[in-house]
Image (cartoon, rainbow, N blue to C red; front, side):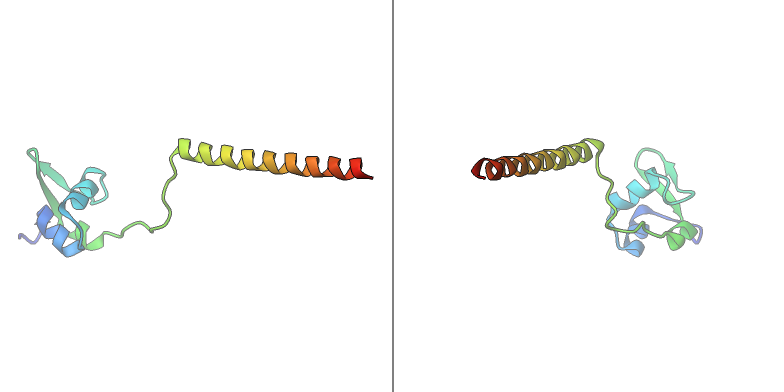
Length: 96
């Protein structure tokens, strides 16, 4: 290992991540200054690896279709509850 750059294997070992994860970080530009040499080889600046801060967990991005599906389900449940309330309100009025 040179002082300036690390290989993907070295970075993965240091960061306690898989090779695939480190390669993905390089591809997305999360490891600043990483350079791709050829088809599969990345050279990652040591400084970039040392300064890398992972994003907070638990804030998963919901796919727009999934979000729309959940909103539609909530609207359907609300409509069912309102229909049940109207039904029982009409039953009470009829029994009086």
